[in-house]
Image (spheres, rainbow, N blue to C red):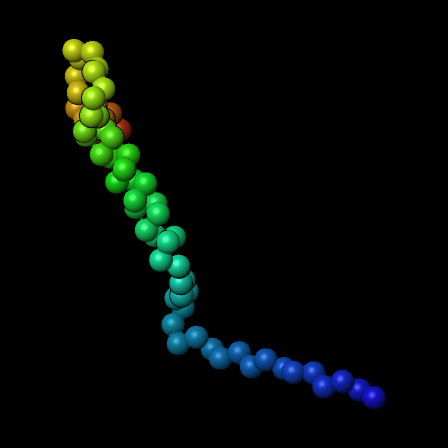
Length: 69
């Protein structure tokens, strides 16, 4: 007795784009982690740093140094 085989029909795509579907947490969790780390840089809370430049100024200085002139 032979078994039936199901053949799949592939519809040609209308465009050459690829559709990617992410779950909500795959976008929300990295965004939340980024926001938390940014808040730690901007608002260090009770941490008493040395009298040097603030962390945000140093961060912006590093970013400006990496950008082409």
